[in-house]
Length: 210
Image (cartoon, rainbow, N blue to C red):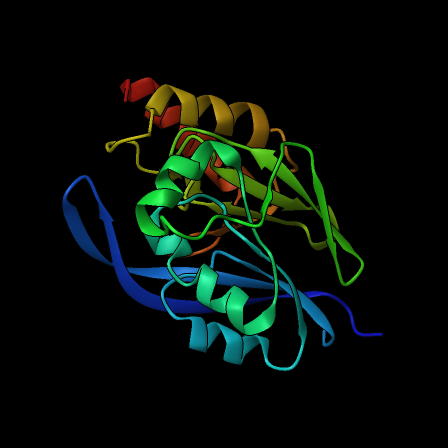
């Protein structure tokens, strides 16, 4: 039996919200072993993600939130593989902006546990960047998949619709900074970081009164 591991795929496309569009690179995280995996955030390119999964069984397509750049390839990937698309219900209004005719297959709930390749990932509801934003904590891998809630350098953006800065700071402080400081944070965009490295950045944001 092979050990579970984390694979990163970077895909490129566009993020659109509130009438604006931006070019973005997204991290797609594949967690599992040689036999089965889950995909966290099916961004932009279903073909590339399906190729990275290969002949492994895809157990779920997990959406950390429903901004279009994180979910645009989810229905296509699900159609190729038969895997269910999972989303927190508070993000359905955002989901429907991108996929009005195709609902997610199942809900993510705070405290829910997903298991793949013998590894448990706990769903942490972390609203702020989006109402239904979640992170996934995999203690056995020493990993947190943070979506756009926490980045190398501080909290995710809260300047657009459905977002709120005090809420994201509360989510990070109460749900994420309580994790072991050595936990590696696998983000929705850009470089990985650790919980310990980000704690002072979050405090700086608070001190600046963002």
